[in-house]
Image (tube, rainbow, N blue to C red; front, top):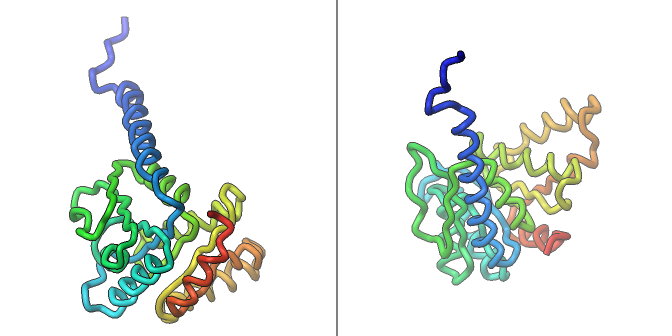
Length: 217
């Protein structure tokens, strides 16, 4: 007779994990369905107050709020904090969609609504489902992950072609865009139409203009 399975058998753990995942989806849907489609802004958690990128992000949050757009970020420090700060201090809806990490700081203090997730993939669904545009400021792996996931979903027609707007210094974006054109478009890995999903904005006014073109309302 086979030995009985240990109490911490992975099949049992995975079964109960389904309920935790479902609970996160329910909480996310209930919280975010109450606000209009927002502009989600991604960027580095390592940007310091006073840094030019922080100042630019704060200005962007302020402008989005003044234009009547709710703002969503990852709810953390750095660029995310700056965007939330600008939106909150202008009287706008400033939402933090946070992730629970071992070394992650608490949500920034400029949020009108905050929701935290244990699972990255649940959080990603919330970003896409409740956004009408993505604005990508300079950041690290997490920022680039959100960038490429969004354009993959648009390319495969899983979501409407909402604007994915690249903001910040040419020194940050030019190398990536050049590589995409040379290594991917020229070799047929993607089409020029796929790359056209990305919108390059160098001013806040340009960002607002691209947001207004969104087919998602």
